[in-house]
Length: 133
Image (cartoon, rainbow, N blue to C red; front, side, top):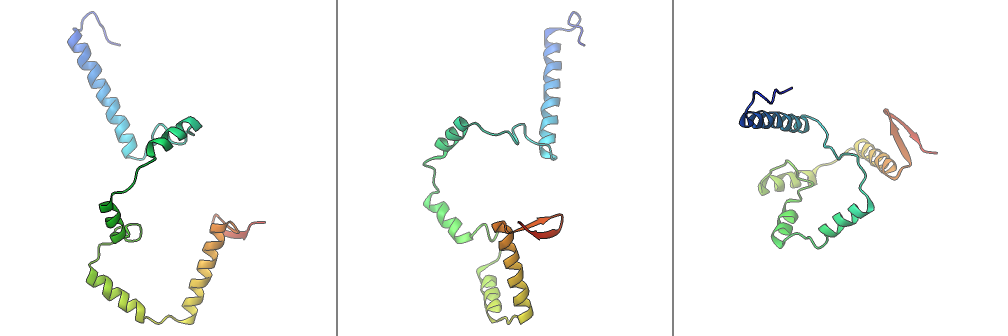
């Protein structure tokens, strides 16, 4: 505890400010190093959901932003920065590639399994696969 009789008002404010900064830094470090925000997992009320919805209505990308998104296909090329020449070479090589029947069957089985999981026909729990009854 602070002894308020001995300390001046300026010293008290200094100590309060330093303590506040310590706590603020601690919270910041927790968030940066894997801590969770205070509102994670809290369900929004319908009123809040409507307010957020209204706040976002009418927002749209500018024509410039649309062009960039269209050109980059950002979702598919995330982290991949290839020139047009390299892309053309890869495209040509893939076009001429011949796949074995075995590799095509593996790919087909994998895609069928993935779609079954996505549609809920198949569950993956702890590495075990079984049909949902």
